[in-house]
Image (tube, rainbow, N blue to C red; front, side, top):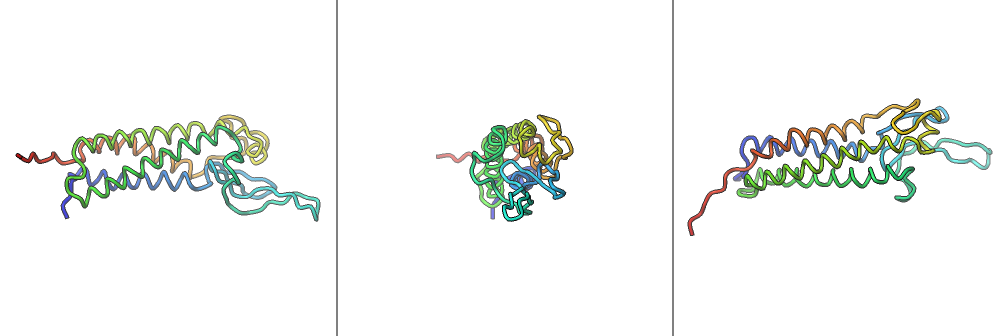
Length: 200
């Protein structure tokens, strides 16, 4: 199999896939914000949540259902900031994944990635990382929602955690995006081989 990538390009392809996978896994997992409610662990993502209170009418009390799942609808996401964060971060993850899969195909297909295509792919990765970074920056603006305040000891506010703390999925998402923006974008500039000129 012929490759259209240089040695730096092969490193770029695998690092791009690693960054995209890290960001996508972090985005999908509901462990961005961790806290507790009714002595049970509660965690939030941008569009998912683990453990939620339900009113038990037979016992006239509130109980915690210890399950993870998506919100019932897009409008059910606790704040407008988290809805924007979900869309922006999802788009960024999609761009990173698209470039990573194209780069991996470049390992096997000759003349798929030229120097120009590599640079354009690097620009797309930079944009994807920027979108994810924007989503991560927007996320703390939703900490003042009622659901989060109940979980964080009624002390949380925008950019104030209260009794909660940041979870590993937030760091994965942001770290993958930062590596894609800083390292992968730079490597993409050296990824493609110079195209052969065919006389016709």
